[in-house]
Length: 605
Picture 1 (cartoon, rainbow, N blue to C red):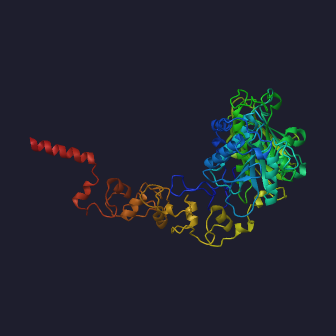
Picture 2: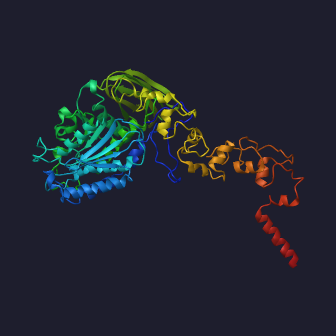
Picture 3: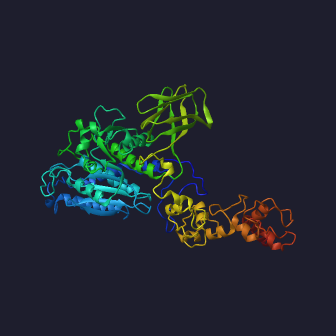
């Protein structure tokens, strides 16, 4: 989710130094769009490998929790715990919850205090005789692959990765009421008891089988808890955001459906959460259930030719994209959707935008190659704006429309190529979002006390809120005590919490970052004033590395400073005053060798 740059000397948000730097930290996400990166990082082969490896032991059924010890169910649980620890690099805090030993892993966010959380979940048990590759090895693989990817960043909010057990515990009379989904009952109650607020909960069920005759945009369902327009933000928004993310970055394979028309919603683990008013839920489920002959049978094997692991990868990626889109936002900035693409004569580009609050959709664009028509549809399918552009506009951004909208739901923007040549589009759309549905745009809220954005306790030009976000000390202008102020480190891509980088040499000019700061130089450029004279050389000979003095001749010997550098002579001592040996410095080594050979040959003669 690209944002308008914050009005600050720190424009790009917190980022760590390169991973090769000693003591380097993971990228910390704030005002930093990584949705495309998340999509690229989710790997289909690795996803499929998780399904294969997890289901290798066969059925993992359990009807009574007392039967778990020594069973394949327990073996699978232990494998999962080890794998989740491994792929998170030990960052995941894992807890076994309830009699059914549900796995609840928390990837801690960097913000202090209690904040809403994200959840992704699936169940790891099966029916008897069923190896459960699609039900629910596909969901477990989504949990694992997303954990692997999301663990490579620091996020502001906690993310929970949950593997439920006891989905088929039909006959457990020890945990009333008897019936299915006993594991999710236990976990949902823990969330209630601990007062954990869920911002969005994505539950992944069978997803690998698409319908035989489905359109390309209905290869998987995202089902939301239908609560009406006034509570659109609770569940429907997250399903439609998932559809939008798949549309923006993936293959646009999602259809959203309300729970009222989708019976599988009421059979899923998340139903135990909605029963406890934890309603921010979305169920990912295959569109081809009616065509899935392997569902709940011994034929549910990972290598089936009718299973699409591409769908599994895309569902995993869109869930990660929803989380990244939400957590990459910044205080004080509207959301921005970047809309780029290429289409051809008579064809159309389309992008979805889920709107949660009265806002204005502002689209600016430039396009080349052909004429274009821009259309905007509201959630009811009516055209609410149009713009016909008969000429190309390849250079400058032009405002296409600025439309006030009030209806909540999924808006569609279409751009059609109305000429004979291909159409290239580069555009962006600004709008506001209200994630928690309190009537206040996210632009004016954050998961911190917003007053902290206007307080600077240590007078270092970094607000106390940003100190929390960066992980620096709001009472010290130099948090890591390396003699370089925090704000200078941030401006120059250093880590203000790591003193080691003061001794490093980012631009390989023989000057440490601390020396670069002391001289007022650019630690990321060996030639700060861009005059072709390296900083280190200018300092060594007494010139100013911050002034373009390449054409000056301070010693009056008719050689510019640049020529003196190229000749290897001293720019502050005239060649007329230099001892003869100084002039030899400027003679190339190859010339000296040739001269020596000539003298040797003359003497031989």
